[in-house]
Structure formats: structure tokens, C-alpha cells
Length: 491
Image 1 (tube, rainbow, N blue to C red):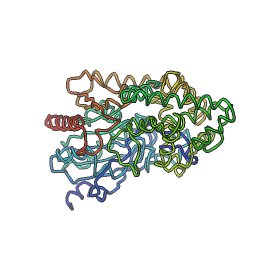
Image 2: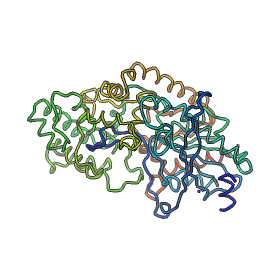
Image 3: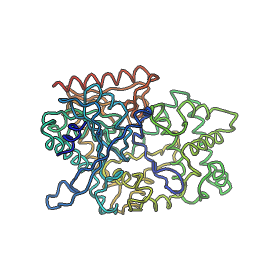
Image 4: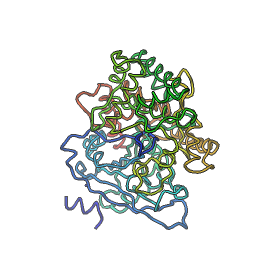
């Protein structure tokens, strides 16, 4: 007796601490801020047999991919909703809470969540040696999804023969949702793609400029204060005594070598990323275990003269961030970061967090390296492109270089063209303060695709559970999604 029949019949950041390295992810959706009742629901984990290589008929190796299922809102004849796992482990939280679950309730949908190959507990290979990572590609991930949909439908023809599949995702998994609808239109009826970077650039220098513009719109003095702090650090790192002062103020894990360019770049990166994340996920109703900073509290601290100079205020912000993230110190040693990222065991901390895997994807296909290479930028001329491309070569080998990445990025941008011109029944959602939104599809040119820009919306803010405190434009966006889902499911 197959799984669905049985259930229906019987009534489903590589952080900045010293031991975890220093490669921080600026994408992902985290966990929804679920109500206690939803968190108490038991969601059973299942496993699905996949091919290691979908495109080599001679390779018969298989592996087990993790997925989860929730039938609470399903009624016979309803659609099937699939939440696509991205660059992190899937959790049961997203099976019980979030906007897509609210849509499922309205549409009487069966809900699945499929974990991305090489992330979480979905392990296609024995380890993550560079040679094994060749099967970590966007095309292989899309083929996993297509195989899953096709198999679930065919194995449960009695119930699901004519069921329509709708896929959901946010950030990278939002891109996968759109690409899956484009690649397998015969399997996927519609897609909801939230905050998805669908264009690719090797050097995404616009990211920090977007963060800067958001802060400027809130309070220009906040930007000036962060810039001044960054310039002060830059000057201090010209002398050993100045470096010792920075060590003390920012609790660096090791003494900063003023002659080591990569160590200094790593420090600036690890100071910049948390500030960007505050703005990117501002008030998004994501689950956090401790009180965190919002855009408002960040700028309040950066303008509080009682905390001292701009440098001292900046240090106070990072002290609070370290406390929130349970970090004892700020990582600043490039070789330690590289050594951590080169570990290939599934049990190593950075592999569990998905850091090595995500670095491989952005080094080989996605790009969008976040640089700051202009004195007029929020974080000055402190994070050049060669810092990231050098990391690719240092971790995976010399063949992983800028030239190879430029070629790969062109393929992603061909996807973008096809989405814009040819693919229908996709809802694209963007937050106006999301620094990734400029890489999204704002104006689709197909008749039956829709783009929604949420004024004041942060990265993936529409994905999280609705709340009474949500701004009206966010509520309206979710209502628009529900409207189109119901409309398209009738087609």
C-alpha cells in the first residue's frame, strides 16, 4: 500500500564565530514565527529514492532524499502544494506555519516539502569532496523536483492523477520555484516565487548600495555614522597599535595582522554582513530565539552619542549582535575560514550548516558576490571581488575561477530571459527594501504571470505567517497571491 493511500485511508549561517569560520550567507528564509499550537504538530519525515545523476543513463547510483508531508487541509480533488527546500535544512516549522500553509488551508491542498540535494540530511554522496560536488547543480536539483512530482502523482493515480501542483519558494528556493515551472510546465501548474534573485552577476556591487539607500531613506545620519566608523577602522588598521585597538573594540578572535590583506577583508566582511542582514530581514516575522536588532534600533544605536564616537557605537552594535548569535568573538583569520570550508565530512560543522555546499553553488553557477569596492559605498573600498573569487580557488581548486564563473552566469541569465518572455502562471513577490530585488523579475511580459512589489517589504517577508501587526500592503500582497492561486487552479 503506497504512502498517500495509507495516510488517507487511516486518517502527514556559516556564522562568524571562531569555530564556524566566516562565510556568511545573505540568502535563505530561516524559520517562520509559528504559533505554539503549530509547533506542537508532529510532522513525519519520509525518504524518496533519487538518482545521483539524472543525466547519465549509465550511472545507476541512487540515494535517499528527505521530504515531509502534511495532509491536514487536504480534501479530495484539491491541489498539491510543494515547498522547495533551499540552501538549508528543511524543518517541520514550514510544514505547519507560513503563508503557503495559509494558502493551503484556503485551497484544500496537500502539502509536501522536499529537501535540496546536499543540504540537511539529503546526502547523494559519501562525502563532499570537490569531485563529488559535481552533482550539486541547479539542473540536478530541478530534476530531483521533477522526478519527485512525477513519481508521487503516478504512484497515487487513484487520488492524484489530475491534481495540480503548485510550487513555493523564497530567495534561492524561490528561484528554483520559477525555474521549475519554466523547465517542467507539464508537471507544475503554477509557482509562487518570493524574493528570488533570477538574474546573476559575478560582482553584485549593487547589494550594499541598496542597503545604503534603505538606511538613507530612514535617516541619512545613520549612513554617515556607519561610514565614519568604517573609515576609522580602515585608518586604525594601518598601524599595529591601531589594530590592537580594533581587536579590543570588536572582540576579534585573533590579533589582526596589518600586512595580511585577506584577514582585513574578512574582518570588514564580517562587520558588514550582519548590518546588511538587519536591513534585509527587517521586521519580517521570522522566528528568532532572542530579541534582535531592527533597522530602527540599529540606527538609534548608531546615532546615540551617549555610546561614544561612531566607532564606539558601531562596536556596541556588534557586541549586541554577538550576544544575540551566541558568538564569543569576531572571526578575522582567512586561513581558518578556508580550512573550515575545505572539510568534506557530513559531520563537520560547516557542512551541517550548508556553507561548503552553498559556496560551491555560488562559485560554479550563481555568482552574485557581495562586494564593497568604492569609497562612496556604505562600507568603503574594503571588500573586493578577488576576495571571493580567490576563496573559490582556495577551497575548490584553481579551475574554479572568475573566467569559469562568467560562463556559468550567462546560463542563469538565459533562464531569466525565458522566464520574462515565455513562462506563465508565476507570481513574483519583492520587498521594496530587499537588496536582492534588483535581480528579481519585476515586469514579466507573459500574459499570466504577476509581479508584486511590497512597499517597505523586506526579503521574503510575504513568506512568513500573517500577523495582526502586518502592514496593509503586505496583507494585500498575500490576498493577491490567494486570488491568483484560486483563479489559476480553476484553469
